[in-house]
Length: 431
Image 1 (tube, one colour):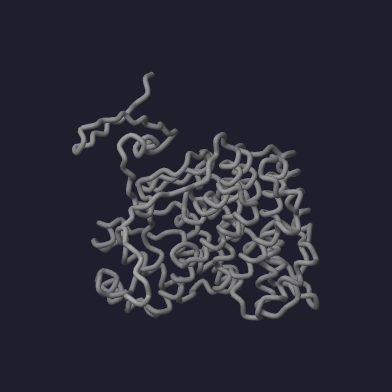
Image 2: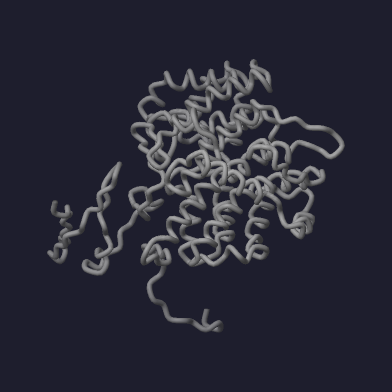
């Protein structure tokens, strides 16, 4: 079958070029514009990269119009129902679901990499007592390259694999230690008898003077949330990891850059903003007034947790997490939690409103995840840290995929310059 092409004609010069079309497995095809500047002398301009494919990837696919999310081809609904976080992590790293022996081996590797170098304790002590946990995460994860020199040679596949294992394994330990530091409690060592999420809960909430039992509902809920947050195509933090990685930076520095990007309120902090919004609304009787404000472009109020840059349908992750929210609140929280009841009522009213229907503004995953974290006793300043733990799997999978490509080159976006034209320097006495 002949290669499909697109003809582009410059109306100014009359010159035309044929650009090849790259065919995907799913989704829109992409026009390869590699020759566009070289032959026509123009850059392409796409603020926010809304219409630009920055790479090719075999990891994650989402269809915003249909509300579909696939990890390595598997629908998120099936993985959420039948799988667990470490099994999905294996899938993302290696491309296939593991058999029983492979899963046991992978789980053992991750479990036995959870310990942190003891010297890192001094690093945590160096942060101010009220430092934000995400600030600590950025610093500590970036510092790991100073401790693990046997996993920083990005040209060595074994180094890349062990770096991936270490990052996935140690992220809960770093997160829990960051939390403990922020509240003035001693760090808790990992327990190899516990599951990935059970270990995280134990490190966060146990204390040396009392026995702690991991609640199975909390463990299950956190595992589910982590599955839903593993990867999401080329979002801001993932693109940051890839761009940093394209320079040849070590994997720990690349993941630290992803954490920094995730920290932004427009990316990883949305679920905390949902709780703030619900508290501001306060009562279901106030919903119509706040919906009116959300429609008013002159009003700074925004309806947080609704709509998505890519999804123009119901976020499939939101449907899954909504059911878990009921289960968690029934067991661990107040099933009549006023914020949860308010969230349900807000969703019900908004989805019947023509304004939101026409604009396809549906609840996204952030709308409910903060409510679950709250019921689990996780404070708001740790919400984005939880996101970072889960997304580490996607980041390292994307990084490994990119590094393994042939002819990998450093990322170098171009710009449309709108500053002053050439000017001559004027000496100080003449200004």
